[in-house]
Image 1: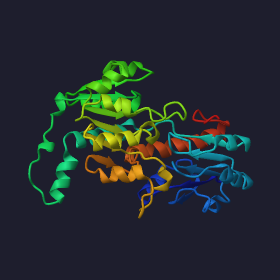
Image 2: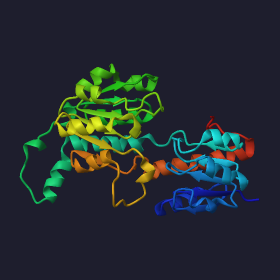
Image 3: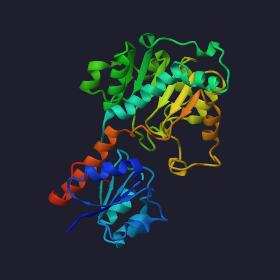
Image 4: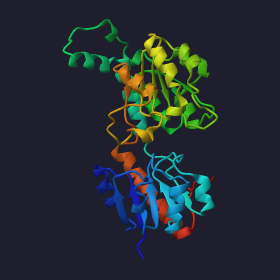
Length: 331
């Protein structure tokens, strides 16, 4: 009997990837919307669901899936905080994730955002759109080979961004509690305070551990940065004190801020918003072009998408043929 999967949050340009990579011949139900309380009925009659970030997999939805006999609740993302693991395991539902995908996807975005701000490209293009073609003092910049870049979090993504900058001659400093052998080969490790003091660009690639590193990039660390330096967050919104960033930008104590992640993403991502209710988000929008927001597109590349779908399909095949997968998420 064909195994049936309901995949949520499938964008139009992703459909062919889901179909062409379907080497196990699963029966696919590709749903453009994220899973919510309102559309949970779309999963009825399926054997499994495949989620993405900001899908609602709380106890209510998981209990409904259980009632329909859906045992497999997988996500094609690295993060899994959108799934209530306690409820899933109480229901004997299996949860699996994609532990990694092409590191170039996020690294390239962080690299691009860093240089966009450091080279004042966003400011210059904004002024030109305003029909102001004067060359501003604020557009004066440094060449890449003379930059010092700080990478916080030197896993596969951080190492890849390091290599991007080093290829152009920049000095790269790193900070990580866990220093892998691969990172030690390319990164000059320093303490966190020195990194924030020395770097022209600080790029964040650390996971978020609720209750442990909330808002760890705070006013104190930001105050160590050069007033011309820029901060890039392509990791998780919760690790940055956005209020402190806003104050630093407003007081000319920080050169720029770019983020691919925002607080309460499920309220905004995938939607065209008429009214922003989060004052911090609105303040960042108002601070453009010194603040840049992208809508969580770090993994939005062909290569990363192929990895996510392929690994997800392999996860399903593993549990169906062996009863488990190396990518299980335990409570």
